[in-house]
Image (cartoon, rainbow, N blue to C red; front, side, top):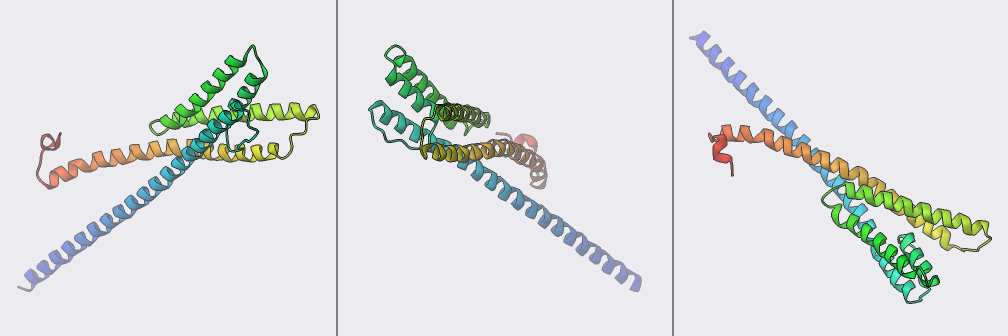
Length: 212
């Protein structure tokens, strides 16, 4: 009789230990899942911030080009440099004016496509970064030529440089965030695919029953 009682007690203790172990493992999985969700949200916010900065620069570039085309001296620094430069060259040239205006429009369209499609593919953010690096190089090269020619550019050079560095910083972060976001999405889909069989088994459904 006493042996039977000890056996029952041992079985009960083993059962409770097993349940506690399962609860601890489940809690650990929940904590890990929360960490991944937080990481995913932080990366997504960084990517959207880069896209927002690109969008603001594009809008201000369009405004600058329109103001320059109508002869206004007002210019916003937080913008792409080359389109405004091409419009200025187009106004100064009667022969190649149309081509300069067309080239300016093409550059803005390219940036617009990068802003629009980077939501779907991170490679468009890479394209935006490459375009903005080329724009920065063009601005820096022209600035050096003007300085060598003793042309006083005032504080506008420093302001434009600061804002270009600002946009480049966020675009670089956006490129990294875009590919990290893609990896995290792949991991999430893999975990969901692994959890589907266990859910199916728990509720007694077959794979065929859960297929759409």
